[in-house]
Structure formats: C-alpha cells, structure tokens
Image 1 (cartoon, rainbow, N blue to C red):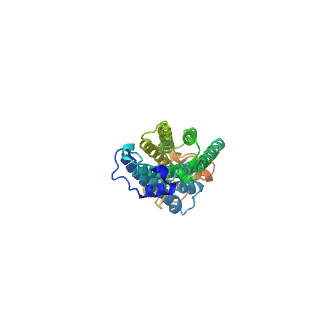
Image 2: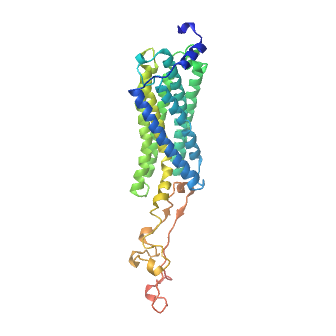
Length: 373
C-alpha cells in the first residue's frame, strides 16, 4: 500500500494516527525519568540565573552564564520530543506498532537527537568557560580552549552531515519523501560524536583535579568542588552506556525492535545532557547558600562586633603575631567568591591592639620597641 502513495499522502496518514492508548515498560520509564530530570534542570538553572543575574545585581554575569542558559533552552524541547516519541513507539516492541506509529516515532526521535546534541554541546562549552573563570594557570587554559574548540568543530560537522544526509530532510523518517545517502554514515557519525563528548567530559573533570588537589583551601570546599566536577564523569558514563545501542541504527543487520532500543538511546542521551546542565550550574549556587546561611568569614575569632573594644577583644596577646594579627588570620585570604580568582581580588585583615593604663596613659610594658602595636 505504501508503494502506491506519495510522501505527502503517507505523512497525512501518519499525522492522523493516534498515539498509543497506554505506554508501559521501558517507554514509561523513559517518560517518567525525563519529566524528573527536566524539573531538576529547570530549578537548578533558574537558581543560577537568580544568583548571577539578580542576587548580585548582574555584576558577575559572564560569558559562561550566557552559554549555560543558551545550552539549557534547547534541552526542554528535546525532552518534549523524546516524551512524545514514547507515546508513538520509543521504548516499545515492534509487535505493538504499525507503520504509521513507527514513522511518527522516527520523526520525534530525529528531532530529539538534533536538538539534544545542540544543547549538550553548548552546555559543555559553558562548562569550559566556567573553568576559564575559575582557573588562571596558563597550561590549563590552553587545554580548555583546545577542548571546546575541538568539540565545537565536531558538532558542526556532525550536524552538517545529518542535514545533508537525506533530501529533503523529512526523508530521514518518511522514506517516500525523498532519498538518503547509502551506507552507515549516521552510525559512524554517532560513534565519533559520542567519543568526542566522552573525551571532552573527562578532560573537563581530570584537568581541574590536578589544580584543585594542590590548592590551600578547606578540605570540605575542595571535596565539594571535585564532586561537582565528577558529575561530568557521570555524564560521560551515560554516553558510554548509550554507545552499544547505536548498532541498532543498522536496520538491515538488526531489523527487529529498533524503536525499543531507541528508547535506551533517548534515556541515556537525556541523562548525559541533564547531568551536564546540573554540573554546569551548581558552582555559582554556593553564593545562594551563603546568602541564606551566612559565611564563615563574616566574623573572626576575637571580634564580636561590639563598639566597645574592651568588651569585644577577646583574643589573648599570646595568640597574636608580631604584627598584631590573629594567627588564625595570618596571611592573605582570597574572597570567598566564585569570581574572585578571575579578578585577582584578595583581602587582608589586620587587628590592632592598644592597651592603656588606669590613669589613661599608654602602658609602657605593652608597647613594642619598634614603635607600638
């Protein structure tokens, strides 16, 4: 029957086809998981926009923030197309699908893949620019620049192939609309693109590790920063789990249950992209927690904030350095700000002590030979 129809007629019948009455099994898992992941991503990115755009009056809004939002925006449509695909066959066995539902599922699958890939690539570039904001070491910056440029060129080449593979574009999912290039070029591009994503994820996670491990910072903060970086590793693991399912793109070698296996591709692809979005937007949220719970740097040992120095100064003289600083505050402390490293802002705290005798005169026993405190 399909051989006697035109592509437009087949498309009309496909769009008249109702969705599955009920989805179950893998299709249901994909749908629920994507809803949860989308909600988490919306909340995290929304908080990032609030912290960087409103909490600080937009003063520290940077290129990485624009890229993070730009990478997030296509993510929601990709989730929508993947969920719609589950209602037409993604994650469902062939015995439950007719030809019209399969074409609709293939269309939504293609839309989801293209949009997801754009979202994932831009998000990974945003992570790269976040690292450029955090780390000033020259070799690190060179590695990061090479990383995101190579990833961008790969994405452009892969997308160009997808759009040029079938003419017109609708022939990718409707075989009566036109013709496609022969061979397994789409599978090769999928493997190559995923390998590049895995490599770039590992570079973004491993390179900062060699920098952070030598930093003089509280162990708690160091662990939290490394934990965020490890989310990129989890994203790469999602890519690795997805790759074995690419072989089912070859419907000549694997003619059965293509859409069932495509459900796994949708699941792990969205997980990879969602984890990247969360990892990209978590570091700026430290400022949000400080706004609610306060900072440990807000008060120093020995100073309670009282206007009376005799009541407020509780640090023993023996705990002071020769310059009059508390030993806890000796040295330079960087501002506890995720943007301080890029602006080289530092803070120095000096505590001066003056002791007076009962008659109001300076006590010579507490005055140093070099001119006092």
